[in-house]
Image 1 (tube, one colour):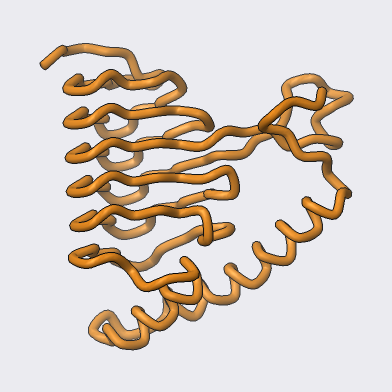
Image 2 (cartoon, rainbow, N blue to C red):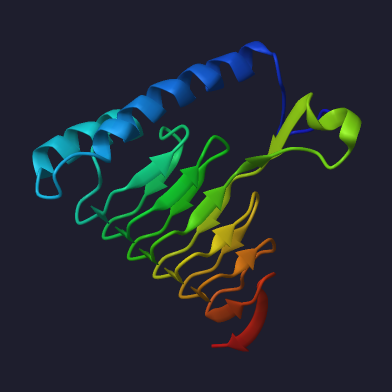
Length: 180
């Protein structure tokens, strides 16, 4: 099973990830109960979650969920609406001016399909979202996916394959339905 994007469960790396998940879960639960207008409180907690200040012009509306935080890279002027989840252990990059609708989920880690390997390994890959992308409500972006600049992911789409720049993808398993 070992390859580049694999982690053995019950390894020191997995233990470190688990400790970070517990810490970030505590931070996000505090973030998600703050009054909506407590900008200073939100900024302080986001800095702890991300390990750095939120970039200029970024808007994030809680509730917000992440399992790691340190591997979430947000470009300037990104907009993230309510109830989004970023499972970012393998890394998520969101390009400048990208808009993310409510309930969008980004997942960078999973488990092998093989029954014997499922409880022993985590697999995954980074997610890369280009500039000026729009991701519709309830979309799910799976490990290893790249979404090209100016693309649109329709509401409810499940994106398991790369999305070319300037395209619209839709459906339970996202497919290109329009170019340009």
